[in-house]
Structures are given as C-alpha cells and as structure tokens.
Image 1 (spheres, rainbow, N blue to C red):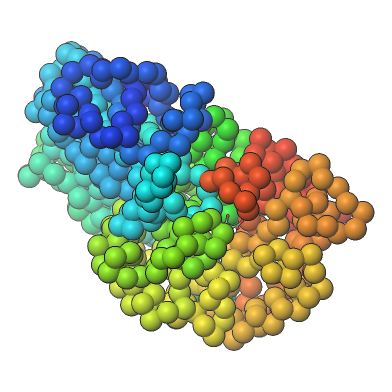
Image 2: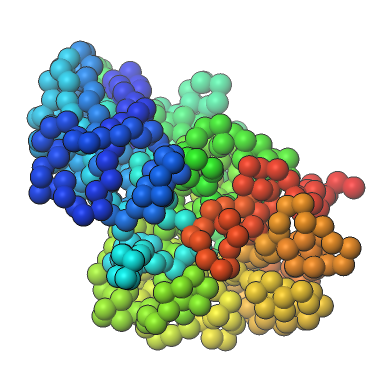
Amino acid sequence: MLRPQDTATRERKNLDGIWSFRLDSDSAGRSARWHDGPLPGARDMAVPASINDVLADAAARDHIGDIWYQRTVRIPRGWTGQRVALHFESATHRATVWVDDHEVVSHEGGYTPFEADITEHVTAGEEIRVTALVNNTLSFQSIPPGVIEQTPGGPVQRYWHDFFNYAGLHRSVWLSATPQARIEDITVVTDFSGTTGSVFWTVEAAGGDGLDVQVVLRDAEGDEVATGTGASGSLSVPDVHLWAPGDGYLYDLEVRLVDDHGEVHDSVHQSVGVRTVEVRGTEFLVNREPFYFRGFGMHEDHSVIGKAHSNAHLVNDFALLDWIGANSFRTSHYPYSEDVLDYADRHGIVVIDETAAVGLNMGLGGGIFGGQGYTTFSPDTINGTSREVHAQAIRELVARDKNHPSVVLWSIANEPESDTEAAEDYFRPLFDVAREADPTRPVGFVNVMLAPHGKCRVSQFADVLMLNRYYGWYVNTGDLAGAEIAWTEELGGWASEGKPIVITEYGADTLAGNHSLTPQPWSEEYQVDYLDMNHRVFDSVDAVVGEQVWNFADFATTSGIMRVDGNKKGVFTRDRRPKSAAFALRRRWRQEG
Ligand code: GCB
C-alpha cells in the first residue's frame, strides 16, 4: 500500500478537522447501528488528536472501549472513473469503518496505516458519510498487551508499558483517487561501489495488464540521472551523492505505468536515499563506515494533543535534536507518523524503528505499574494468537517503512521477558518474520535489565544488542560509584558476544528546577552526573556503538506511585525546555567546549 500522494495521475483530499464524536463504553452503538445515520448525541473532536486530553472530561481521559467518529465529505467532482480509497494513517488501537451504511474495512494495531477501496460506494460530486468506530482496549492479544480488570469501582485498563494509553485518530485521514490501472507498491534497495550507486526497484501493479512500468530517477535538482523499464530492475547512478547521517540527500524515483503509445496511466514518486547498512563484527556500518548512534528514545507525546502528529512539534523536535548534536533516535515504543520518517530522511537523522510490542513482560511492569500476578507467556496470556498479531505488526511496520533510508535497524520489541524458554520460543519465529520481510536491514530487540548478560535467551537471534540499563537509577540509586562498577562489569559480558551494542536507554528522572549541591536523585545535577558516569562506561567498551538517552522529553504515563505527572527522565521538559543535562549532552555530542 502506498501513502496517498498528489501526482500527475493521482489526487488526495485531506479529511482532518473537527469530526463528530461519541464515547461508547458499553458498545451500544454497534447494535444500535450508529453508523447508519448522523451520530446520535455527538460532541466535537479534533482529528488528528488523542481523545484523552482535548476535552475537560475525566470520562474521556479514562475512557475504555469504543469511540465513534463521523463526518461527511464530498467526493471531488473530477473523480469519476477513478479508484477511490479511504486511507487512515493510524487508528489506535483498532477500527472498523463504514461509508454510509457499508462496512468497508477493519484494522488491528494502532500505529500503522490501512485503507479501503470505496469506489463502489461513491459518486463523484456527491457526499458520503464516513463513520469510524475506534476501540482503545488492550488485551493479551493486542500489541501492546494489557488486561481489563473488573474492580468494585468498574473496569480498569492495566498495561505493562510506561506511557499513557492515548487513543483515537492520531494521524491524518485521506480520500485518495488513483487510476484503475495503478501502482500498488514499490520496494527500493540501494548499494554503491566507488562513486557509482545502484538502485534496485520492484513494483507491484494492479489492473495494468498490457501496460509497462517505466522508472525515472532524478537528483535533488530534478535532473534525470537514470531510467529503466520493467516490474523490477536496477539503475546505475554515476557520481552518486550518498544519503548519510547528517546529509539527507534524496533522489526521486518516478514510477509510471505506460501503454504502447507512451500514454502515462499512473505515476507515483518515491524518494530514495542511496546508502548501505551492515553489521560487521562489533561495528555498525553505514556506507561501510562505522556509525555511532547519539540521540534518544523518544515519544509522540504533547500536551492537549497526546500522541497526535503535529508538524509544528515535528519541526521543533528536530531543531532540538540538531541543537543538541543528536544524529539518531528510536521510535520508542511504536511506529511514529510517516511524516516523522520523511523528515528524518530529509535531515539525515538515523532511526531505529520499533513495533508497538512493549510491555510483554508482566514480571517487570507488574512490580512498577500494577497488575501483578500474571505469567507473561501462557495459553491464557501472551499466546500463539498474540504472536500472530505481533508478526503482523512487524510485517506492517516493514511494509510501511522499508523505503526510508533513515531506518537502519528494526526493533521488534521493547523489554519483553527474555530469560525464559517460553520467550525464546515466542521470539525465534518473529526474527524470521522480520528478516523475511526485509533481508536488507539488521534486526534486534531491546533487552531489559532483568535479563542480564548470561541470562537472556533471545539476544542470540539479534544482529545488534540493544540494552536498556538504569544503573544509578533503579539500582544503585544515588550511588554512582557503585553503579559504575556494576555497569562496567555487565557491559563487559555483553561485549564478549562479538556484536555491536547500542545503549537504547539510560536515564534518571529529573524534576526541572530541582537543584542540589550534592548529587541527589531527581535533581538536575544528578541527571548530569548520572549521564557522565554512563558515558565513562560506554567510552571504555569498544563494542558500544551508540548511546540513546531515555528520554528526549518528559512524557505522560499512567498515574501511580512511581510517577508524578508522568515520566521525568526527559532531557527536555514536556514543553521542550532544556534541563541542565541538555547543555551537558550538547557539549559531549557537539564536542564544543
Ligand atoms: C524502560 C522502558 C521505558 C520506561 C523507562 C523508565 O526500561 O523501556 O518505556 O519509560 O524504562 O523510565 O522506567
């Protein structure tokens, strides 16, 4: 599936704005067929937005269950004869969609796109009613998992991940018109030798019998550099300008469906960054040169809009990444908006791309976030069905993001239980799924402190070791000297594995404005000292090829005794003001003063 685009043969119409909206905890709307007419009892909701913080309403903040959205839209007059699709960039965590009273699509998973061919239900120039029934419940068979517990006060949604369960239509909704004979998918893989680049393409088309595929590669100035024909092939790029960290140079690949008379039936554009990624021994190579990740685990998280995409915040966050000298981030803990990845491509920022498989660890989250008493992998909890949902999440992530040069490494899960036979059995086939979906990029998962070196049974499958460690915070709290010794020892063990290591999380909760003469946890000074200690440890181990601080900014979490108004491990506050650690990191990462 291609993202909707405006091209010589395609058009799209954005459906963002104010939609009718209604909460439906009892799932009354389905049997009452609310989609058959104007949504009864509707209020307003912005799209894109998480529903939770937009309204001054605890029921919305804490809602569990169905969420109805509706709006009408006129199909543009000129769309007669076109294939018309309704495209959702995401609906968290699942949705069913109707056009008028026709059910057109359902989708599971809150962070990847889906669409429905609605051609048969629309007439150019006429209005349709679009109704989306979004559902935000988490279960043992959802990614991420959760469970609804019945309490005397009513149902409570528990989950084992440390960020607020924001839900809704977080990203844009589109109508799109494509020709009936159309390009359905493009896959691009790149390589280079000396100064010559290679672009391998594969195109899937539909309804295009008798039509030929033509491809044209243009450089950033718009000059044609290579052309080819056929459903797959390779292009040679003389004097190639590589995509590289810090240099987001992009070519444009135009793919056309053309008939014998040279008439273009469909035309789409795919940006292409020519670069290679590979793991060699303990090195992570981009364009055959060692790369060191500097940056953060991030979140899509802002006040009011929650997890919604916003271009102003996107540009601001990347400006801060640039200011601080970061060259990379991880999409912790779910696939981010495609706009984020496009922007990373254009700005030469390297991305570790993660599925929403977070919290598959009831031992860990049980202690911290509540909801104790579950076994992670069992027929009644995370089971074969969950694994199939997880596999599908991996496939959809790769399908969506495979052509982004910024994406250099897949993370198929964050901090799952990984020290048991059940975990080994669960994950072995998922690594195969990822490698089958994308044979060109390394695959890993993020290891938790509870499964240290020697105990983890899943790291054997990973190309890169990604470690989250909190020595000096969750253990050796306030004791940085002891933390340094323990951390150095454990890291030495991992280094003996002969694989590159990225420290994907290290961080200390810090209340902005809380200062201390002596290094006290929660103070800005302690965060700085904590990071310094970690950096001494990393700098002493050659196999460490990256450091990504947890977190870029403070973020919202579920409420509980471990969190005061959210997680405060940000180097920036939630509204992006720097803590002292921001200046310290800037000095290290930009090597200034
Ligand atoms: C972790 C998790 C992350 C949490 C973080 C913390 O290991 O991966 O989601 O927010 O720790 O601050 O506890």
